[in-house]
Image 1 (cartoon, rainbow, N blue to C red):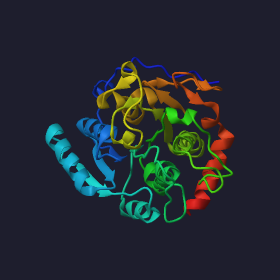
Image 2 (tube, rainbow, N blue to C red):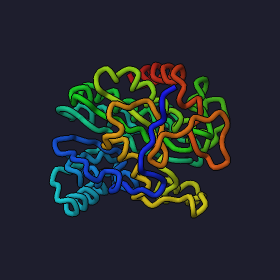
Image 3 (cartoon, helix red, strand yellow):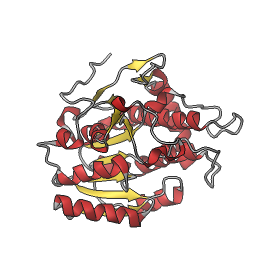
Length: 305
């Protein structure tokens, strides 16, 4: 058993507070889904600390508006936009092919939640699993050489308390047999995001690449458009600035140097649980299981190859 990481930050900490005093000059970062919500805040804070930041977004016009705002507010001109549709493998491959040089920080932030009726990609994959996990898996593995060339890289995998709703359903990933359930599909995808952190660290830590997963908390963003808005009690909700804090901690804080394969919430390592708590805190044991992580990696590699 490892010692859980504890920081001086917590539920109410903001991304700006977490990164205070950190200099990212010369570091290159990618943030997916950075046109809104905690993605745009994560990109802004990394840029404000001096990083070169690429906003990888499905709608480049919306991304450019955000990027321009970041350039103006931070004085950092090295903020750019690149098209990326995670549900389309061709788009992921085009993005990877266009990338040159090292990559120090990859924040796999983009996501969809609780799509009400079953949607599939052109490959026949269930849309939430395809977007939240498989697209990010293809992106991360496609950028492996760039991450290794950084001489110390971090990958941030944005999961959620949804991991406590469902494990990865290895025998029916795409609801070809099971009746489709929007939240079960979402939960599966977020368990997969956590498992990505476990296996990527296992495979790549020797090359200086460390990956952690996180639950950003309950933040009112476009993510809840299919659920009728945020259902979390007001006292447990976060602002966007607070919601981006754990992502930024994992992306840039010295306390996480050479730490990987773990799951965080409220800027601290979360407890692994064997039963879902009433407050949806912690991470499910199956979402941290090394055997599940290895199996998922091999399945995903076969799907995206």
